Length: 136
Image: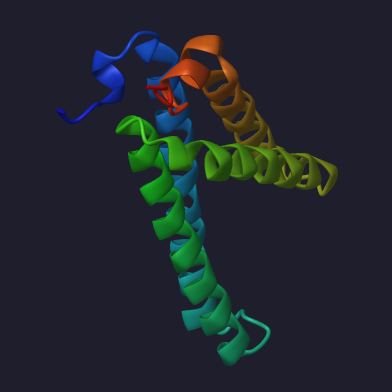
C-alpha cells in the first residue's frame, strides 16, 4: 500500500484547492502572530502576559492548521472534519472582520473559507477522503 497524495487521486484539483486554502490560512495566522509579537514588543499590548499567552495559542493553532493541510494533501480521512471546522470558523471570523471595518483581512478570509469548503465538499474529494470498508 503506497502513500497517497492529492496529486495522484481522482479529483485531485479540488483536494489541492482545499489543502492550499488551509495552508494559506495557517500562513495568514503566522503573519498575525508576527504582527502581535511586534505590537507586544512595542508595548502596545494590553498586558504582556496576555499577549504572550495569545501568541502561544495562535502558534499552536497555526501548527494544527498546517498539520490538517498536510493531512488533506496526503488524503488522510481524519483531516476532513477539522478542515471543514477550520473553514467554518474562518468564514465566521471573515464576516466579523468585515463588520469591524477590516475589509483587507475579512474578504480574503471569506474567499479562503469558500474555496476551502468547495474543495472539501466536492464529490471527488468526499470519495477520496472517505474510508471504503471492504466487506468479506
